[in-house]
Length: 430
Ligand code: SUG
Picture 1: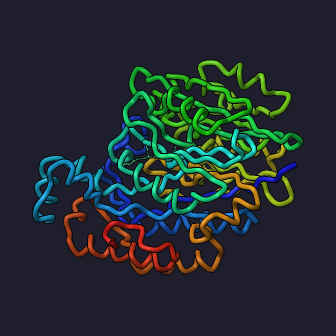
Picture 2: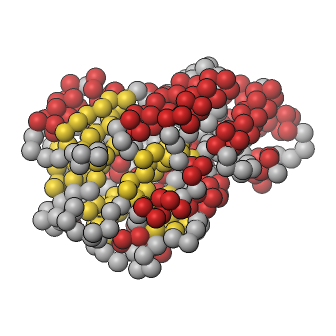
């Protein structure tokens, strides 16, 4: 049996983290639009979660924040000339576009890419496809730089990084948030669960089935792959990604009974996979969305037991807490629950699972991964100091008009690349 090691790559929260209500269909994003944000707390909360994972004996990596404002976007839209004047004009004319250009949304690394481990592919290479995030402008502008970072981290003799699928709604792709690789401990190959949407009455779906199928083809997935359609009513209740209503790990798949139009294809895996279906009576979809109970990381610990890493919002809700307590008490591999504070991210609809891209690698692939993207506790301490020094603890959208603040954000990113020894990855460094 070839052993795969799971590494979680978290998106480091960037200095421009803010609340602009840009993600239609994401209830937290709409509810917190224009609230004051705390980028320092957001980044520290993220690092605290990464530290917890390391302390649990897991491998942990990170992706760097994208540089903002996204001048490549603004220039393409004709905002040339004096930068300060251009930003002032834009802020007045189109606040959403202004906010989008400063979005720190790359923190939600679960949407950065879809990956398939080498055990399941025709050419026995590990494959990555950068997500195009076509549904929302502030997210679509992540695609190019994500692709570049993935190449920097993983493009080598053993792994292949693919560019984003063609832009547009037909191939709208939001990455690993809608894909889960399951596996039975005794079996070599995995099972791939792809989840796609068709828009509800109110909110749009974000992952298209054409995109999921293209990725499966592109990666040469040579093992079972199933495609489940999101329940449009769940989409309308705020389930904009599958990881808001389901989580899987190895031979366990935890999901809400109202997650899909039809879960028969999932049921057909029951001989290999332990399906844990949570009923609407245990917790409604609305409460699942409010607490992000399912947006937890389900991880295998070194002793082979499994742990859930959940947002504290689900500890504070009696129904969600009861579901977790019952899971721990019942006969299944989930034996531990850790509640983490990622409230700054949660207010934009991003829980623990959103903040990380799961990558399953062989020992050789892990050795060949660019080590600058991997973390240890010492590096986390250095990153915490870097955040303390460089990040603001209060931010509103109009602060982006402050030139000094923008310059400070750029020099913080410059310092970060030195700290992590990744080289000059940002255009302003060239
Ligand atoms: O795409 N929020 C993100 C949250 C992504 C969560 N990821 C997963 N479920 N995997 C989104 O909706 C809000 C930005 C704002 O409103 O300012 C935002 O983009």
